[in-house]
Length: 450
Image (cartoon, rainbow, N blue to C red; front, top):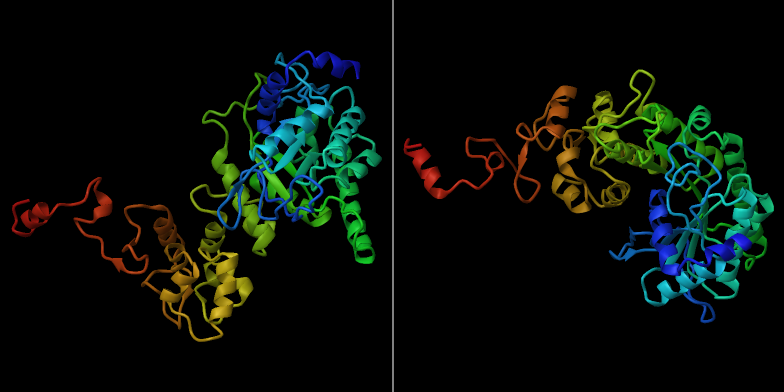
């Protein structure tokens, strides 16, 4: 506590500036997965629709206060801006300060929840105790009933993590790097076993709590929104195939809600780190997120998307398109007869549109016009589907041809504004020009003056 008293000499505004900036590398954009109504006695509520700059079903953007408890750290991870060997401004909140900030931000309608992470101050146990004390005060003294997401600290007392789990909606333990070898090279103070241990404890706690809630309806919930983790992408040489294998293993073995992928940002001058010429691998991060959704919601397996002979995603195609053009033997799919599972594998067909197709075709055969109204993206789907035995456009089931259509601009089939009708490309196709062709130019061309 003497250390926290010394940090009290810094103003709350100065601390907030330092610790919000230090938290920007921790990915937390996620739906909360928790719904809790206001009870008239506590401050706030928790909506299932979303949290942390996520968008709810009615279009609202919902946000949370995202801070570090401290950016002091005893570890020297090569990739981390807050590592002990870096000369950066340091700050540490007190538990009361975090509570004050959360309540004041909430009262001003700036936030609907709190995301609290931390560097390692003195020891993992000491840091976890401070986080627990903060959340306990927020729930019991300030009666805050909103969404709270905290980071579990590997190496802390499991009992502290368990107690914290009964106070928060979501917990996450960062895997940091995909492999144990990557941790040994870039984060020598962290170990794979010490990271997986609290993840397993949280998983078991969630399962035990579900069984308890069946017997005792009003029992307190343990991490009701589930747990998540984060992996840094591009700091170590793992392929996309290895990353997908790790993510799939985490989903299956630890019941994770989300795996977040964070494109590596080189904030330190260190010879052990790669030096990206083109900046952070953001497009690769995007493709990994798309593939992650295929694992979670579309019934794909990591071995279907990639293999050792093709260990990286095609950056020009989204992962489902890439899979489809490599498995043309399974296409075209007849929309009026295909199973729900096969519909999910058609590019341009999402989970909602696949469900709508299954429901709508019970009333009669579907046409391409119906698919557009249902929400199918026909510009991508038309190469892979038929309606009543016919394709929307006479296309060739050839990989090179379809890839050119999906990625090229000049050779792509041109559609009208309705998204349904197509037109033959001509000399005066508007897509070729930076401005529309004028009537005078069309007349001059028709009479041979152009």
